[in-house]
Length: 414
Image (cartoon, rainbow, N blue to C red; front, side):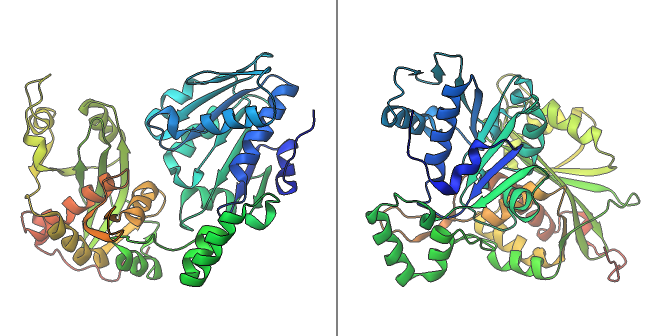
């Protein structure tokens, strides 16, 4: 059969462990990836995993895109589209999953030929580290498509700035799409005239240091210019304090912090969801740290119906020293963290996902006025940001031994 296909994505038909297309809007990346996989799935049976970082329902996936391409190319006699899968008469199948919420279960995937990661700019370091060794069938491939946002995003760092061996990486923009619609061209030109920096990001695939509306813009820029996102070793002579944001349906996020002199060394970060408290206590136990206090938000004092014991009580029963972070307004906590940020050094590897959340933590947008609100947006980034806000709140309130400065160690250098 014959089908139209953009020349810029021709590399998708040649073997490579990693195939990555990145760039601005309107380039036809997703359209081309879907068409290439469907065509190759006709030629031979393929087991294809279509994934993105967050997928709350099948409508968040590329399921509809694949269905429309099947119709366009006249492949209805070859593929059957169900509510949650696409299957070919020769055994080809497409399944769909979110990495952030299912990454542990994805470890059991066997026989996957291709994993297509769509909107990959959102994929975290921990998700990549779990997914990549999972796709281990001989000759298996990982396809990556995304519009970049921050040059510090894990996907951009991993596949554009420092691509692995056997990777084909192509920047694909609207100029590479022979079928770029005129209506999008008009929108592009309007934005180019009104906001050139936004045009470069949205349409030309340029990265930026922080997102629009980011709450810690100035703090992130200062920490970056002062190289405070770096390698921060664990000091075995000092205890580690942990700061938690609790969730079951949502994320539980934990920061690991040491105070050395007047500096706060943020040495580690962990987050996950869907696990009971025992899971997170095991994580703490498996790390090589000597702990002092576990700081919990005020909702740790709420009773749990299943156990009739609060999170605070359960942690005390496990032998942990627990304190509750003073309850303050969110804006006061944000200002507290802004005050302490110049004294914070972050381990850029162990804290990669937490740092990325801080970069993406931003204010909401009023749907009527289209203006920034005064309240932070509650999304996948807010849990890590809240946990670090609790750190700053505890320190500012003076309810910790840390508030009494130890001997200064100003000459410390990483």
